[in-house]
Image 1: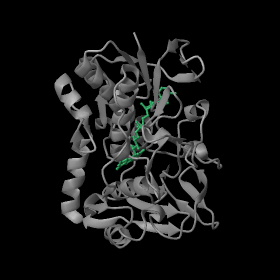
Image 2: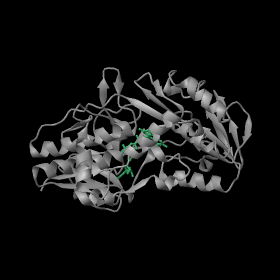
Image 3: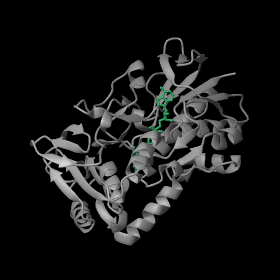
Image 4: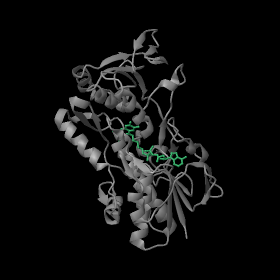
Amino acid sequence: MPHIVVIGGGFAGVWSAASAAQVRHSTGAELRITLIAPQRDLVLRPRLYEADPSRATVALDRILKPIGVDHVRASVRRIDVARRRVTTDDGRDIDYERLVLAAGSRLIRPELPGADRLFDIDTLGGAQRLQAHLRKRSGFHATVVGSGFTGLELATELASRGRVLLVDRATEVGPELGAGPRPQILTALDELGIVCRLGVTVTEVGDGFAELSDGSRIDTDAVVWTAGLQASPLTLQIPGPRDQLGRLQVDEWLRVTEDVFAAGDTAAARIDPDHSTVQSCQYAVPLGKTAGHNAAADLLGLAALPFAPDPYVTCLDLGAAGALLTDGWDRRVQASGSEGKKIKKYIMQLIHPPVDDADAIFTAAREIRGRDV
Ligand SMILES: Cc1cc2nc3c(=O)[nH]c(=O)nc-3n(C[C@H](O)[C@H](O)[C@H](O)COP(=O)(O)OP(=O)(O)OC[C@H]3O[C@@H](n4cnc5c(N)ncnc54)[C@H](O)[C@@H]3O)c2cc1C
């Protein structure tokens, strides 16, 4: 029986597997689908800035079991593209006819004195360690390095419980967010009493202090590093060009080689002549659905779907100052304050996949580009 192997149990991996299973279900074809990921849960990474990150999980079994996808709980160590075989860290060899690489991204931690004292919210474990550490310190003083999406959402959330310093080596807050939402972001930071140090970075972390690149020293209970995501190093084992984030370049059907597709944070898919996908759920979900559909369609002789995502939007949580919804690549603000917050809450519910119900999962898997396939 032909076998599709999906590496990764994040948004892209789960929706790849669900989409392939939906094709199998609708055609009645014989197809084996295996998802390989070490953890028990789908981790909803966009919620890891919240005060209780343990709520940002969904058991993979509740999604995969109802739709007949096997879950191998292991990490893939090696991909042999020529033999169409992956090898796991516990020594299993698993052969495939089609592979979907959806192993996501990870934070690159800097090398600096005291780096082992840095916190992050890149993984569930990292976010839980940070919150446990801060809970022991009432009125804590936290330093957040990086004023991109993750840094801003974390800093504004922490500001309700402690003092927060936001550090960025850029000379403006949210360098990659552009000028569109910046005035509202600055107003929110001001309102929440968050102090910004721009044009500097943290160069050393010690017990209760950090040193900045301008030579100054600050007292702090925790330094949280948020800057610098790179695609999984498994991308290095697939032949093909990669971008500066380590992502594999995929064609419009999300193929990297004849038998290998990539989705989510490991894939750079072109959207228009000027833009590629951004590492985000907004793209991980449709990339996953399209890659899984195409892997199955390829094996079953069905038509492949080109990747065509919805227009780009972002929704940035600003803690007690609300949230900002932007639209387009220049991030024009469409909603802010409590109206933005309502939309953020809605989006956070929307990213939860349906559970325990095969029909609901298949229906959601079919929704690609806002239409039913
Ligand atoms: C703190 C934070 C906040 C964010 N906020 C937002 C937001 O507000 N909006 C938004 O759209 N996006 C946000 N993102 C980005 C978003 O979470 C990612 O783009 C999305 O999770 C990517 O999904 P993915 O499935 O490609 O990868 P991931 O979610 O990274 O999942 C990767 C999966 O692969 C598995 N894996 C890794 N290596 C191996 C291996 N060797 N073998 C087997 N399995 C492996 C992992 O265990 C995991 O299951 C945020 C990210 C973070 C960290």
